[in-house]
Amino acid sequence: MSQKKRNSNGLGHTFKVGNSYKTVIRRKGRVFTATAKTQQESRRLAKIKADEFLPSVEKPIVQKDLLLSEFLLRWLDNEHRHNVAYTTYKRYRSLAVQHINPRIGDYLLNDLTARVITSCLSEMRDSGQGIRSQQQARALLSICLGEAESLDYLQVNPVRKVKNPQGSSKAFEPLKIEEVKRLLKTFEGTYLSARLHIALICGMRQGESLGLRWKDVDLERGTIEVHAQIQYVDRKPVFTNLKTARSRRTVVLTQETIDALRGHVKIVEKLRWNSGSNWENWDLVFPSTLGTPRSPKTDYDQWQDALKLCGITPRRLHDARHSAATLMYASGVGIETISRALGHSSSTITSRLYVHSAEAPLRDAATRLEKILK
Image 1 (cartoon, one colour):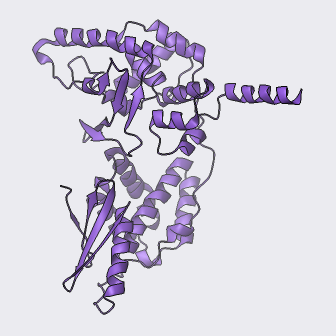
Image 2 (cartoon, rainbow, N blue to C red; image 1 turned 135 degrees about the vertical axis):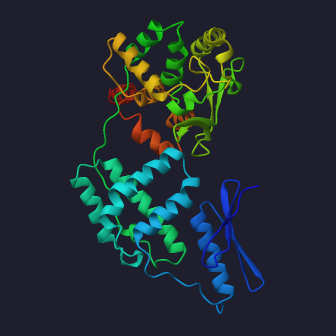
Image 3 (tube, rainbow, N blue to C red; image 1 turned 180 degrees about the horizontal axis):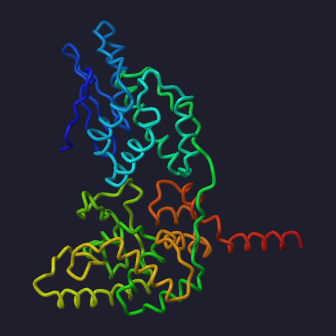
């Protein structure tokens, strides 16, 4: 059963039900409930119901002198960290401590305006912070102040009137098909063979790959069930659920990837044999030499070494995922199918982030147009 979270100011309690949240408010012997996709919306709807039916109930006391810095960290540490991945929480806390609170943390919640928040984001930009950091800071403030609004700490969330910072982000650099073939051929039969297949052909994220367990791999059916990842919490590896329902997906394997994984079974067995009694059985597809989770840094370094050995320009490991998407698109696979394979929350994200550089479909379109004109 999901753990219930008590809310302050007489707003009852909220708990998770499936993929939604339910809020229950009791006032003078009556019960009011509301279910929504987010905690904030669930609380807001339940409060509206209670206020409509019991307008005479004494309204909760609103704290008028609460500083943003106090509320932001308290909410982030006690509430929001349980609703996001640990890495997201750490990123948000870093933004709060290093950028938001030093600039506008001394403002009272009710004194915050769209102009104040826009000024904060502009100062971040002028100090050299990238567009992504600015967007994440705005998103953090939007969620935080939306919660403050639902708790009656402020009347209106000012972030609604703040435009999302725009700008050019760092471009992805997919590998060419010749480079992908070279990598797979060079490392055929080695530990890296299956790892490269999972990255370049399946497009799985690093955390998903390092958290992949044999129990989730069906070589007879040629599928992988992706539903967890490895993350480091206080420097210790732990399995965590994926962020969205669409991230949890079934990946269908090519025959070459199936063959690479069959060979990889023997490689892992050899590692286990060599480590003897020191082996820790985590059931990982890509374990360390002792069976424990493989270090993300080691994984990244070996990716760079592989690129260098094959004479390929250095790329981010995430560019392997981009390469998989671009290759699928260039082969005629539809955007929606690629989106499902990658576990994106929507096909719009797939189109915007990954397939803009695929040239083959554009050439095909030009050829079709040329035929019509002739």
